Image 1 (cartoon, rainbow, N blue to C red):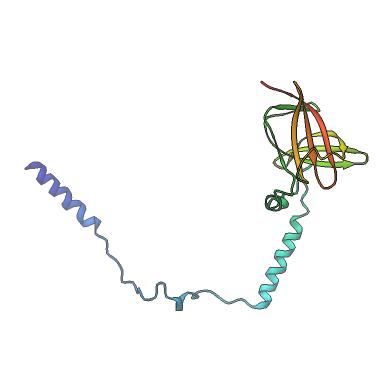
Image 2 (image 1 turned 135 degrees about the horizontal axis):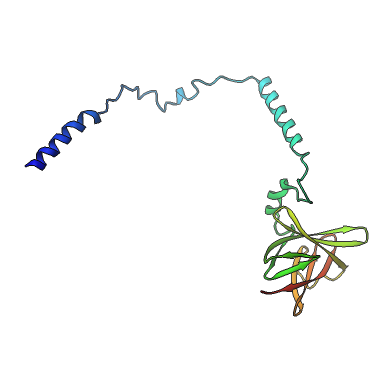
Length: 182
């Protein structure tokens, strides 16, 4: 009986404070398409043109930024690279650690871009937008039995040496790198 009276007392104390009173709301004005534009002011053609020219100035001004360090790929081309993945620079999936000019490349994915400077050819290894390593390569007319114009592949030559083969519209090249397994 005490439990029942105690519960009744607690219920009697809490109930008056938990009652919520709703205000009268005009439900006809909510969600009515006739009132959808209330509170918005129309803009003139001149205001619209001023805003568009300001946006164009900001776009042109943002392209003059310089990379912080090293050579970076233009970040504006990211979507273009993804949409043209078959014709863009392919990715190299290295399963082992590779040494290129005292730089150790850990296993992972690298985008390799071929570059000609004078008579020399280089293969640049990027991860993200950062240049990780640069290897001197040998230009060749051989397409390494590839069916694609843009290709990138590797094959083991000796116990600790890989041959990395690169192909693009401009040239085909290959280089030898040292690798080691843990």
